[in-house]
Image 1 (tube, rainbow, N blue to C red):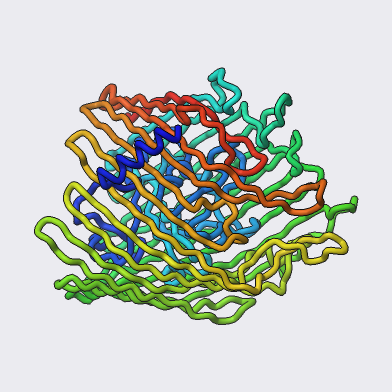
Image 2 (cartoon, rainbow, N blue to C red):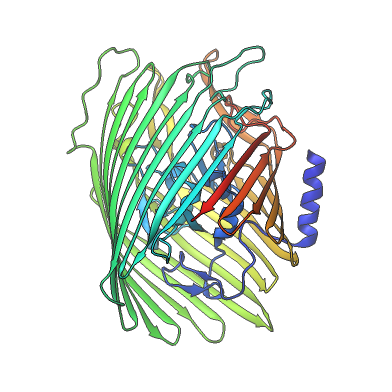
Length: 638
């Protein structure tokens, strides 16, 4: 397997290719770094855009599986049991430093430790595209945008009066030791939508079930129980265009999932996590002359219940809005002014260690905070190659008062006949406030926590040609007031969240390459080097490589994807020593294959083989990983 990885890496360097970004012309439009629809060459960032074609090639996978192939990103837990908690390790950062947007609206869970969002809740079959920007982006996206912003656009209604889409797949879900290939993972989705005069509408439903895999890795000779995972999603949207200038959309989204997990000491167990989430919202857009006014708003209600030896129940409420005005002054000058707000509430019941009665519910007056942030951003795209992206925001937090963040991002685009060479640099800051869980959880929270402060320095270049793209970026992230989970009372052995006094730095290099080798064959790949201090390097590979071949001939498509993860440190609590122990997880390489065939204009068949070599590896200490698996499915459009 290592030999296979070396051959693919060598081919990647020789062919000079890149990651999941498809080969597109220089006029590719990106939005995430300015909120304006601007050509890629006017952006001062290296932005990853996962197109609808790449998503279609990955049918049957989850969204974390696809994003895990992007340079600078490692999503821990995505290769194991479906119910495993996910860790978003981006440029040395953590979950709480990543903002997720769905159709322009920020989504998160105020009752979770990291105030994050579970990407598995979004069915891949319902996503149109994904844009990812790395580095501090708090100026445009507020508290939490310290390491990356992931902006997800879902599929819009068909231009037809009515259209029906069906997708279904079945596959195995087994470890390296179990190679019977019995059906254990089932996915189904259906959507109906269309347009009628000034109206648009769509409804979507999806279901995912997985079984046949234990959450934790069973010791040799033992057979642990399976830990099933079930997820359901329902979505409805209605939109109306009053005229060419004014339109609106309203939506409702319901997610429900249930997962089974083993005991915290890596022994077999029958614990359960049940989650219900309802999200409703609206988007209004008004266009006038050279300007555009947008209002996004959503209200989220989430309830979670943990059925275990020490049960927990959580509920949270979140109101988010983002209103902004964009204006094009002409001659390459664009300006944006907006205001962003988040109103969060959190309640929990928990059973403390050694006690038999439930603790009292936290009152809503204690477990809540409000954030209201005005912000401005200016973009200048000259006709001689110079681009400037400047912005600032004042974070107004009910607990912490005011704090300014800012962004300075110049770039220069040198035109070379049909190609271009872009030089870029940026200096940006971010402000990450503690989550409600970290502040007010009755067992582990601390209301003395300070917000984390983060700054990112970047410099690099990007070369674009009609059939070739290459980029290299150096990044340097510095953090202070890092929030960690530490032993704060050794005598009573009590852990809680605490600000680390030391500053720490994470730096590295991201190289992305892509080339259309011939009309039917494209090669893509990337390399990431991440260096951070040992204490903060848990589960982050120093070296990570992705490479892929995509072959398209008529109605058939074939893709090979390879991923290499370097050695990584991990930690666990050793009950024998009564101390936290650090271990080194060995490097591993995985090779996957995907194929599809357009049987007719309406019907497509697809399938895949994952971990072809059945590599035995550890992603998270003590937890199982998937071995060789297969999946078959179809997509039907009527």
